[in-house]
Image (tube, rainbow, N blue to C red; front, side, top):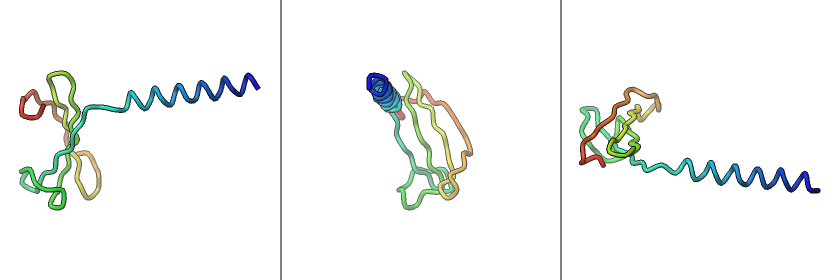
Length: 80
């Protein structure tokens, strides 16, 4: 019984640690075929932005397939 309780406690601790680690400060941008910001319904590309100190890392994906097409890091304060 004690051994089972140790496994349960370890699992809960691991789960809570992973959940708190995965809560990143992120934002999603939608772009049309020309690279201009647009609504989600008109998006050809999607960019996931992850804020890291004074930088924002954007990972661009093709909306239809989900394939990554580009990754870039920006220091533009408008993206922060």
